[in-house]
Image (tube, rainbow, N blue to C red; front, side, top):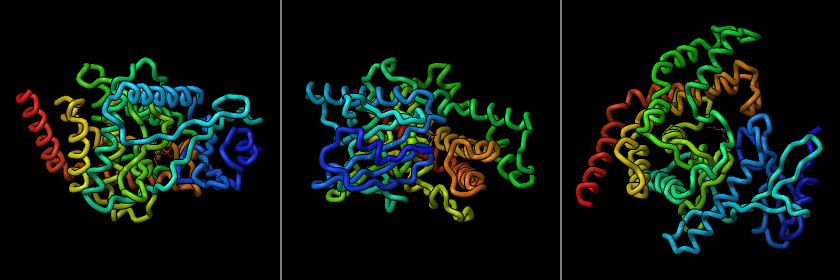
Length: 375
Ligand code: GN1
Ligand code: MG
């Protein structure tokens, strides 16, 4: 039986009295709850059961968050350019641990709730797109001087597209309890079309053209928090997959979730469109805030990342549907197949607008060359 979140919340040393516990957010992996407190609701806490089917070592997540917070404190003390983003901090249990363990062996953590913020389902204009790009860039730049070896890999194989493809191929080869092919033929075709260039980023990593940096791993639009008063982006939450990776995984993930005209689980696949204006502005925002950190080869692979990450997510949703929905939460059978279709349709739209996206990245390359020449 699942542990009661209220019982778990009581194990943490919280500020104020617990008023209630309610489900929070739309995450597909962990179980997330808001623990509201009195007398000050601003001290409310986010309580999460870390999904042990997904994360093999929940302690690694907690240690990476501690490394991030330590790094931010060091930066503050050294008076390095102030970071505008803020991040949730970890609460301790009454016995001083950073997590609680329930009777099933599941890990729970409590983190501060960032009050007076909201997240959005869709970008409303290019100004918001620019702000999202700049926030992602700030996240990358503020972490770039963390020693990469001091971060654990919390989710091995995450965003390694050829590995997802190998798992899918294996699933098909085993051919155990697969739904009839005619139900998912369109998705099988989409996998086929992307198969030959799915190793593009991994090859660039192996050749040394792209390098590992600390990344977020899951910067989808709903993980950005806006401040109610200033309307500015003030946080990027969900730090489970903060780990070494390519910034391209983040850029691809941020763009696929921000520039799609419909949401990831929408039923209206025919309405999927890739908004090039939002993409241009998001990339410009990213460049403006990260130009000192990124190099020309980084920019050259932006288009590949923008096409690859939705294809990879489509493949992950499809494989999970075929395996029986073991990874991503679903409310009903078929939801993961549907999500896969949305991503594959988005890939088609991105490919259709390839030339326009390349125009944007060419412009950024020119800006970068100009700044190198001036230096
Ligand atoms: C999962 O944790 P959550 O629900 O924000 C997934 C991401 C996917 C996303 C799609 C660890 O993110 O990779 O892009 O669903 N996270 C993990 O909504 O697999
Ligand atoms: Mg996540």
